[in-house]
Length: 324
Figure (cartoon, rainbow, N blue to C red):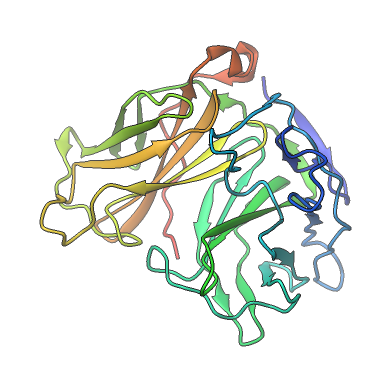
């Protein structure tokens, strides 16, 4: 059952990290949270002080076998920090500071872009994937992808030149009356704007698994998918509870002489723990990027939310929209 909640002018949800990093001090650092209020008279956002880290309600006590955290759980990692920037209403802005505390201005291109900004509400609805533009001072700006009230998780996915790939995350709260969206039950098929996307593959925690998504339209396989971000599909997975971020890599690439432009797009995946995950597949066809969404259960079904917290997938996914 949906629950309506009034979000006031301060951030309500705390970003969470795994129990294995709770109290890790220099590793984890603070997990920041930001209030976004488009109704201020001066049209600017507020930035709250960093919040204290807490255990994940989902009770994750361990992560990947190599001890590495999934992305997006930390606001600061390997000397780099995601710093939200106050800006005009209707805009979202941030900087990445480096080990010297100064804004980073040099980035490598990854998946055709130097910066990927992914946002999702903490109930795993409202997913958006956009690409900000950087000013000379290292500030990244984009029209705000935060579509409505709620506590959102914003992920900056990038590679600083000369460094390792990083995904940093911060919570942002948009005040207003919020209606929680229950997590849809696991399903192997969904539809979006007349396209049907079928999912095959059985992910297991800590093991490499190939997931294949097959796109059709009106019952006819789509064999002319268009490249998007250097592939025929782009997949993000978020874990229910802490929103651990998994940026999944496609198998093959357009123009490599062996990867067909549909109807199947395959991804090498490794989910670190049991639990419920939400998958978001971006694909482009006829010049429009659409997002197909799935809930998958990895490993122990006991990690799924209680039955009253799930509803059957309505098969509509996220309304189609163009990506930047």
